Amino acid sequence: MSAFSFSFSGDDIEEDQSQPVPQPHLSPSSHAAETGTLRRTSNSAFPVAGQPMLPPQKHNLEALLQTLPSKIAYSTLVITLDNGEEISLPRRELWDVRVQLMAEEDDESLGNLAQDDVKTGVYEGGFKSWESSVDVVKELYKRREDILGSPRKALELGCGTALPSLAIFQWLLAKAPSEMKSLDFALADYNPTVLQLVTLPNLLLSWAQVTRKESWEKEGELEIDAEVIQEFLDALKAHSITLSFFSGQWSSKFVELVCQNMPPSQPSKLTIIGAETIYSPAALASFADTLMSLLKHLGCTESTALIAAKKVYFGVGGSMEDFCNIARTQGANVQQIREESDGVRRAVVEIKF
Image (tube, rainbow, N blue to C red; front, side):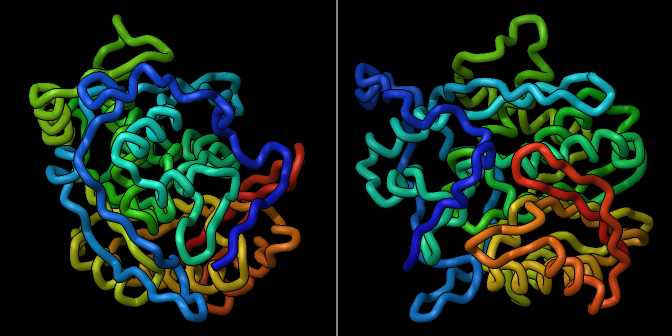
């Protein structure tokens, strides 16, 4: 197993990780993140010599909701779009996650919240929010009317804190239910704990922000009980949104699992999103094969992927150019639609068949 950090200024847009955990909140009855025991794993999203791989798995929404704490502490990331407008994305505080894990004496997952960006064979970076995911949000905003205006499937691969999905989710919830087309919405991350600790909580926070505009604050705590969970489920049903969650390594079995749970429906469009998923040659090849298979086999009339990453991952081996070349050799039409030059150069590419 190896651990590394990309060592780029501006990579991680998370809050200051040195923020102390509020010790008074550690009592089981009062801390801001109390929940039951979570499933753990020590495997990789792609083959690693000498390491077993975690098989793909689907996670039931209702079961995940039952793992939520009684309160979630959050802050808000404000993204300025290209036209000057802003979108606010509330995210669970990492110190709140730490409090939960400390209360559960989960040293392994606490270690995943350390300074290493990725621990090969253990953790794939899902607790962090990355600048490339902000780039995707900006591009999704430009095509939001198309996303909202037709029956669609959406899938975010390597979702982590799920900033692009949170943006889509907010746009969907802001529309009147009578205006909605059906959306089959799936989120996938290698680590099940990431889905449980940040992905689903962030979706719940976005729902609360949209539905509680008058009383919502940019930072604070969201109290969660059975009534809140039912209101969340009712909102999904009213807006014709189906949420699915997947974990495990990129593989043909992962593709089969997703396709089985997102069956073909006509007419429908497919949008796949991925950010910071090609940081090494092994991850790049495995992700590219998985992405191409999903685009081909999810049975939609129109399939598009938006993939964001650094142009080059120095010292690690992955690059956007290598990824695009693999996609083209498999018959995809690849077009760069965005490039950022501030700090480390990043790009967003559109992939179609």
